[in-house]
Length: 248
Image 1 (tube, one colour):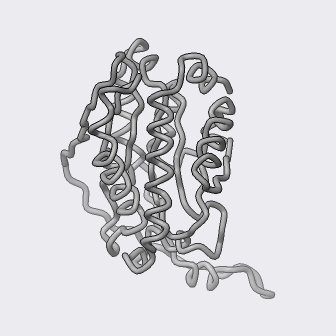
Image 2: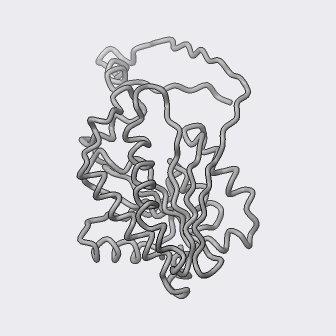
């Protein structure tokens, strides 16, 4: 309930401390609030057991530009992966639950409500959440492993087996929907491009500069191929390996 706003880097520069001290400014935030509804979209492709891998992305974005990187790139990749693997999932050990969350940009609300509504038994049936958020804008991909150290060897092995470079970042970061799965006891990762790279195009997400010209087709293809490999491997991993993913 605390009003908040974002500022551009140029504004931050003008607010920087100078020899004479800090500048003083007054900021006024005006908002309009009204009741609203949205939906979480769920598509299930059952496997040969009652276990699941969740592949997710958020559909909402701030109306500043096109939200091309955040999160048009993640949505495009999830759709392409789903189209590719859907015919094969019935023969896999685990099913694939494809989820499109809304109001991620507003406190991760969609995924929070979903995870909170899951029983302990239902949470135990989810082996892994692979969440795609801003997967283009840089050729460098990272997997935020949310404190689940046990999943990192799996991620790095699958990437290497598919000729891709992947960085694993362990601390839990509550910057996308994977965080709610992780907090709910479900191993969860966020695949993201340009992590901790101030030169990456990702520096302009949530600004009017988040437009489709920042999304290289090569980067989108790279993220999609890696995601497809991760999903297929996760859905077919043996129970002992999947159990290790829950180790922190």
